[in-house]
Image (cartoon, rainbow, N blue to C red; front, side, top):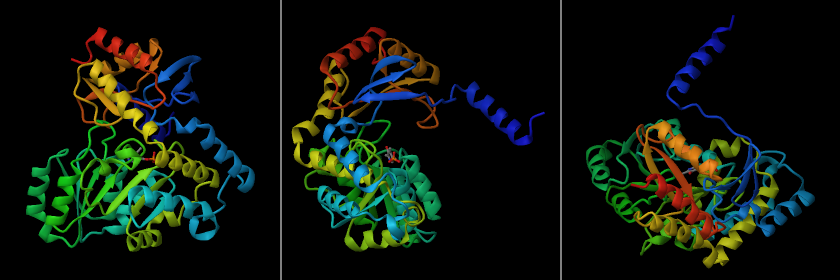
Length: 385
Ligand SMILES: *Cc1c(COP(=O)(O)O)cnc(C)c1O
């Protein structure tokens, strides 16, 4: 007889499976940029977030190899003990430079950044207003902080303003949270209007630009699409997407970053990144700073795709095709797989029920003929209308 824990897990799993929400991590090998192998089948991926193909760039790989040879494979301890390799200072300087802030601080991942930075700044006397589509790690951070959190309808500035009007005065500090590029929808936040609201209601504005950096605004990110640049108090992001390795970061003023460095729990109580990861991030940031033509490619490819399908111009390197129910998205993904494309079906709870979708991501390294072939299959099945 199964113990109660095992039978609990079995009951829960049966429910997840009945709703077509069961997920399995499939062994996948990414040999080169957007080429991968799964079940012995070679596929062209439109599901990686490696927007610039930097995970396989010879200079980026070479930087990691050199660092492993010189410094070994691991950091040995947390940053506040012995893990603070000099490369941290170099890369934090590069990040602050890219974002136009005084300072930056690197964390173990984007998830660890957001889930630690918010509780470092906010507590139960405070209010957090977060876009409804904010990433899970922003929501987790807000909940961990103990602050009152209210989520406003996606990109709806009128609703956000009404909430501020109603609640702002009862709290000490207020943090507005949004993403630069929304990870499942590919649209961008009205950062200009949000920064005006933040100013008007005495709030701090935090923008997670995981999918904007290296892709939009000449690589600097979503804020650089606006003129003048909106006032953003806290920028966060990840090395795991366009930057092509692993890690996360926050950028802001020197005192804010120093305070975060002293209070963010995942920085204090978790081991520092391996030096090789910092070395490759540094090289990747160099490429992003200096090769603007290359950085423009993912968006150009996404727009080539939306044009072929007669959809509104892509706003980022992410294009969703909303299918509706889980099974429809899974079936479409299966058809594309048979044709040699990896396009993941995104299902609830990652996105709202009834909006299961195919999510396409575009890389600088994709070839136009492959994008055309992909679009033709979609047109054939009428998934875009
Ligand atoms: C991917 C992602 C993260 C998490 O970053 P990791 O470095 O992968 O942990 C955080 N926020 C957003 C919006 C993301 O898309």
